Image (cartoon, rainbow, N blue to C red; front, side, top):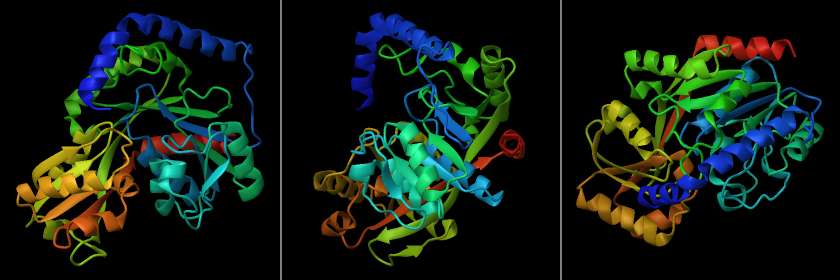
Length: 359
């Protein structure tokens, strides 16, 4: 969905925002007072979620948290809905911890993107998070469950509820769906155990303090942490000299064209520019877009028009691109994937371990 279409939907849906917000409040109260039943699994559950429709960086944070838990000697498993896939209720094994055993069109792009970075971490997809969590425990002996995009999934009990908010726009459009991009009223933040302001590298430190001051009254007794994205590595996956890792120094001498299908594409472009690379053009697609041969041809055509020397995209996007579709269009223009990571603050890591160690 492009931005113009999204804005039109929000405008048309504005009269219904109040009804949807009321429904979400009543739903939360129903779970709070046991009108709706919450199921508990025999292992700790950490939920990573948000209040807005995409764009806060859940996937890099899920990866970083799982890696941290592994360093502490735990055996995490990721349970995810698998947006855009065909997992149904699940459980669908995306990764057994050693290799990816399905594809992005079946499991969704984000679970498939996570798998190569999480060696030893099984990834299970499905809408029934309780069933998927039990499967991860019984089949893979997971000692802790990391619930991807779980803040609204109240049917599964969680021991630690972490809410991510994009530092540059913590409250999204300020209106609840369908009149805006909030999934719930802002009062839902009272359910969180901690709040993390993400992408703090995109705004100045003084603004971060102002954002914290805006968020704190909504959850006055909850800790607020910050995180930022860092460029991890860039790998050439198609075209001349592929496959190989290419340094930022080498890329600094080249003209770069970027494309992606993210909820917040400017975050990706900003990260590449902040690395000192010469971005001469960009092309954006709707979030979770699956690329056709025609899309790749359009990217190559646009890139060539800018006289660029290499094209960069994200890991999430590359999971939905057939390598052959790129080489069919061009054998002279290289395609590289940018690997990013979420840099978790020391205080946030201490918070997680303190909560987990006491469970």
